[in-house]
Amino acid sequence: MNKPRIVILGAGYGGLTTAVQLQKKLNVNAAHITLVNKHDYHYETTWLHETAAGTLHHDRSRFDIKDILNSSKVNFVKDTVTAIKPDEKKVELAGSTIEYDYLVIALGFEPATFGIPGIEEHAFKIGSINQARLIREHIEHQFAKYNNDPEQARLNIVVGGGGFTGIEFLGEIANRVKELCEEFDVDRSKVRLINVEAMETIMPGFDPELVDYAMKSLGSRGVEFKLGAFLKEVRKDGITIEQNGEKEDIPAMTTIWSAGVRANSLVEQSGLEHNRGKVEVTPELRAPSHEDIFVVGDCALIWNKAIDRPYPPTAQIAMQEAEVCAHNLAALIKGGELEQFQYVDRGTVCSLGEKDAMGSIFGGKKIYGWFASVMKKVVDNRALYKIGGVGLVLKKGKFNIF
Ligand SMILES: Cc1cc2nc3c(=O)[nH]c(=O)nc-3n(C[C@H](O)[C@H](O)[C@H](O)COP(=O)(O)OP(=O)(O)OC[C@H]3O[C@@H](n4cnc5c(N)ncnc54)[C@H](O)[C@@H]3O)c2cc1C
Image 1 (tube, rainbow, N blue to C red):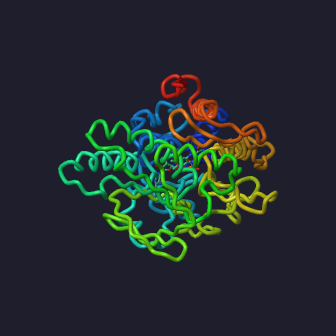
Image 2: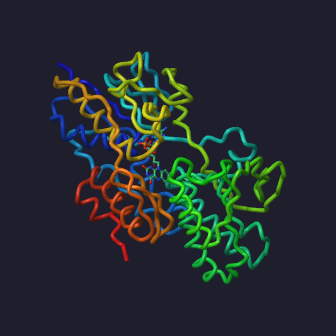
Image 3: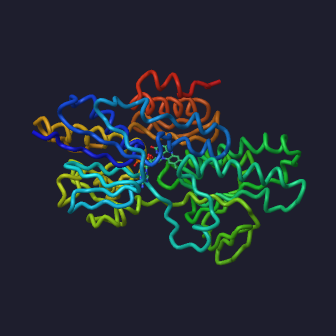
């Protein structure tokens, strides 16, 4: 009998966890498993704000996918997915076509620009190692150029969006600026770090005390908040915002857009039923009307009935979904009951820089400051452990707690 072909698209939190779990659950003869990813490395997406600010080298945030996989059980293909064809049960890659019996879509997110002029062309995004590396190099270049060509726009860094990614980046860059100023002989008081957020608060959905703590911490390190302010346009050398009906132009050669993400657009293009670009999956994590397709991570949408809103796109959810997805695939192949996805909230911690953070753990206990920053490292190390065990934690883990 032919072995069923399982194809997993994307080796981020969702896809790589699915592959790792499947190689534990299935023996060599049970299935032919292929993992496709556009790079031969996995990156810790949740660490990219550090790479972008230059506080963590990009090689610390990534590792070779092949080091994690058992090559006798999972075949890794480094290629870019260009189209998913559910009705033909195949996936087109830049270099070939691949057929499947079961497909797992785990292609992650893309920035959502909401049609704001200039974001596509002029704003940086924190979405991959290469984008993060470009941001670091660009900021360093602006500091290096300032004393040769002293334009204020070089020292103004705008972050569009006061959600998780934007706030975590501000925490890192607020620390890094001190070092950049020393290295390039720039007066710290000349540097502006500006957060533009359309809502009246940063970190919407977070407890107001935690939000207040984050604003005070970042404010004390020079971050200016423009709340209730709409980004109207991004240019190469500046932005326009509208706040309280008034327009303001701010010169800035660095604008980072972190205010919105959407699912990888290949999902929408595939013709699968979708809800604003994401597949609203069944409790078993399958695409409706395509029982052979599982969707996990930022490409999947699951409704949180308790608050009548979808669960937010997080690594924590992607990894939990991947475990259920792998269980269900193994059950379909070996026989057994399918599981339904139940989210377990293990808390959320938002980093505010190397030694500061805030969040809630253990069912809502609020944590702040150094202790929260230690917990954030525990969360980061746990994600490594789930994918690559103790060996990966020892190789890439974060232990600098003092
Ligand atoms: C800076 C930042 C900080 C964050 N902090 C947190 C946090 O603290 N906690 C938390 O829970 N979540 C956090 N998130 C969100 C979290 O990173 C995402 O929800 C999570 O990465 C989603 O996992 P995923 O597997 O769906 O996608 P990803 O982990 O993004 O993986 C997608 C994979 O698909 C690959 N890929 C994409 N397109 C193609 C293609 N066409 N062909 C082949 N391969 C492709 C990519 O290279 C990548 O390897 C953060 C996000 C960012 C950007």
